[in-house]
Image (cartoon, rainbow, N blue to C red; front, side, top):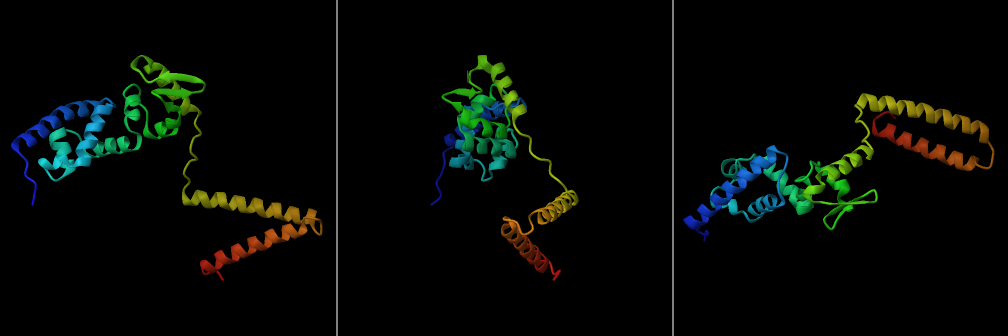
Length: 204
């Protein structure tokens, strides 16, 4: 039997949506969302309370919260992954999720522990937190640029030429030497692997 809901239940939910939505819409524009707002949004999504007024979550977000459903889903995912700590820090200084993910082990007991410094996550430390996070991001290793297939093949060709030359040089220096058996074993493994790749691609 379908559970019925009173007009008061619906009215309370719509009032909550109105209050929450005003804060969330402003927070998203400003790049901020409080931990309390995120927790409330997560609760609405997890408990399906929004179904008091519509069966569609994203429709509820746009119509009754005034925010895009994708933004709401992003906030819910961040809450599920990081909890309140992320939003408490993001309220004070912008921090991308990937940066927070890297910094998470350094955030303990309401403070950022970084480079021998302990900075409490409180409003008066906003500038120190922003500077520490910026320094952390500058020092972080940059991801390797994504190469196109053509560029990957060109780089692979260069490595093959270099490897072939190195093997040829080693064969001349170590022929019949104490490392010869190990060298020939490497050649055999390489030859077998290349033969297999050729067969798999119909070249043999």
